[in-house]
Length: 230
Image 1 (spheres, helix red, strand yellow):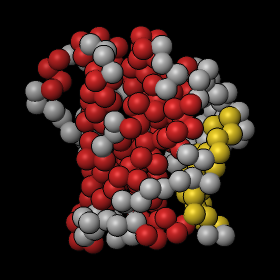
Image 2 (image 1 turned 30 degrees about the horizontal axis):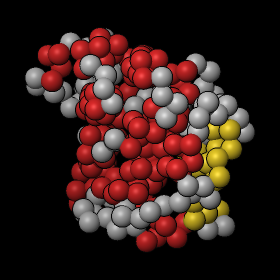
Image 3 (image 1 turned 120 degrees about the vertical axis):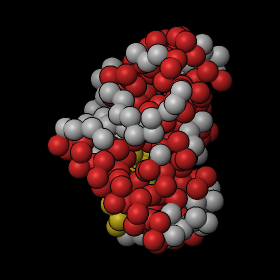
């Protein structure tokens, strides 16, 4: 959705990149800000073009972590509201996985598995280009970042996996995840103790509002599956 992309552009502008160049990379005009269409769909190619431009312009192996740390759940539009109003941490995590495509559609669905008091969140993709690698890293890191901030839990993963090779300098990744990172080793994602989810504090939890936002998100998801727009 447009608000999610604009949040990324704002983060990259803070890193020193001109907004005009970022909008140009995304194929957007400055008028996109006035007014903002909160339900506007953004092609995956536009997001990847922004990542490619940012990676080359900044020449920063940690650009994906910078982007992830700048993300705010409220800029996920209806998806952010679905997560924020969930009753429990586990419910918030499963909702985020279910509706992730509404915010950003990379052609694959997030998956959540619970086993032996451990929750694994997977993003089954095999990135090949620089932009796709950054998108995968942003996705995994941002997912964790959302729950650290929204759930008021300093979640430390048991392990983090990426299917692509490590960047030239992975120190920022190690500092962000604070756990073991396996590069070039399986389905991207991370695992953490379920106790973190059980202790999450969701101050905006509201069953009625959650059902309302879920219906809205379901409608958007159905429209996507039919190949239509709102």
